[in-house]
Amino acid sequence: EPEVTQTPSHQVTQMGQEVILRCVPISNHLYFYWYRQILGQKVEFLVSFYNNEISEKSEIFDDQFSVERPDGSNFTLKIRSTKLEDSAMYFCAGSWTTETQYFGPGTRLLVL
Amino acid sequence: KNQVEQSPQSLIILEGKNCTLQCNYTVSPFSNLRWYKQDTGRGPVSLTIMTFSENTKSNGRYTATLDADTKQSSLHITASQLSDSASYICVVSPGYSSASKIIFGSGTRLSIRP
Image (cartoon, rainbow over all chains, first blue to last red; front, side):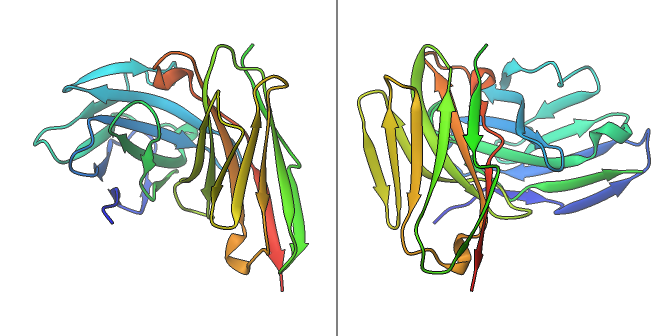
C-alpha cells in the first residue's frame, strides 16, 4: 500500500537557521498539506497546496514559512529563520479530495 | 466557536477489555467526522469517516457512532490489544471544503496493560 514518506525523521537546528522538511506524497494525490503538532498539543493546520499553489494557510504560516513542489513529487516546507517555538512534529499529508488526508510519519524538529 | 472536545483525556485498560472514547463537537455546519489513531511519534492514521447521514461505521475491532442531532460521536474498541495503545483523535470537518477549518480534538491517550 502506498505511503507518504518524510525526511528527515529528526532534525536538530540552531535558532535562526533555515530548515527544509521534505515529503513525498502518494503519487496521485492532488491536495497536499503541512500540519504541526507541538509536544502534548493538538495537531494544527499550517498550509494546503493544490494545483501548484497555496490554497489556504493559517496564521502560523507567516513569512518565515514557504512551501514548494518543485518536481511534481517532492513537497517541501522551508522555515527560513527558525525560532525556539518552531520545535514541533511536522506532518505532511495528502489527499485525492479535501476529505480524508493520509499523513506521513512526521519530522521531529528541535530548535536550540 | 467551533470546537471538538474529547473525553477522557487518558484511559488505561487491561488487554482484552472493551472501551469507549467520546467526542463532542460544536462545529456547524457539519460535513464529516473522522477518528484517527496516532501512535507515539507517528502520523495520524484514519480509522473511520462518517458523514451526516451515517450512524455507525466499523473497521475491524473499531466501531464509531455518530449522533448528528446531539453532536456526539464515540469510538468503541472491542477486545483491546497491546497495539491499541495510542492517542485517538476526533476530527470534524465543516460543511465546506476548507482544510483550514478542519478541527482536531486533543485526543484520548489510551494505554493497554497486559
